Length: 251
Image (cartoon, rainbow, N blue to C red; front, top):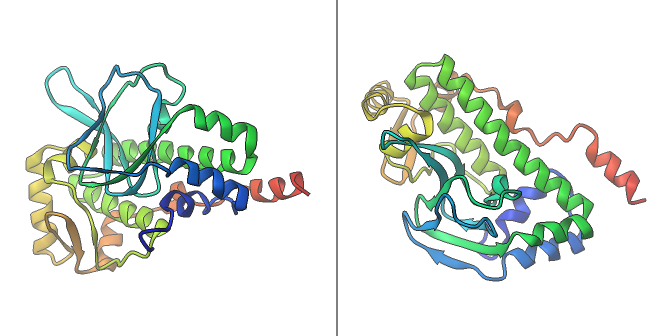
């Protein structure tokens, strides 16, 4: 994908074919791109929830702090995602949002979503589909954490990330961006740094993958998918007949 192309359009167009007017509405969200740095704060818990962001490049996360001083990452947001969509209907943010790495984001006021409801049914359905996938990722992660060992959890997250990236842009399974530290990976999966370090070491020793600082090198994709035992239905683009229903609605 070229730099000038819209990641959010590539993301939402997966669910429904968006027309010219829908694409113009999306372009409104990307009118004010700004460069953000690694670990830059986008908002704090308790801030007024009046602004969202689309991600053109880079990764972001939302997280909640624990009373004991730790934290749990809630969302990992990639190019094409909308940051803050989950908290759209709240007066104040429940979570904190930060960039994981540097990138380009486009802020826009939350009332733009209301405009979409009035102006474009397909675009609104596509946004709901994107939000539903975010929710399904959280559910899957909870189930994986409860039933898998650390090594399998890591393998599953890596395959999931590859799958999400490949839906928006061409992604090489043998080497792709993964700009997260072992600490953040532990906060995503609810695992200790010791578990993460040991598991990554054994995965490297067994010639499955090598985790570098900003990317992952997959040595044996077949073995990685086997370790992950990945069922990608929770990321499916299938809309269960809604595409056809919308076509009928607009005829």
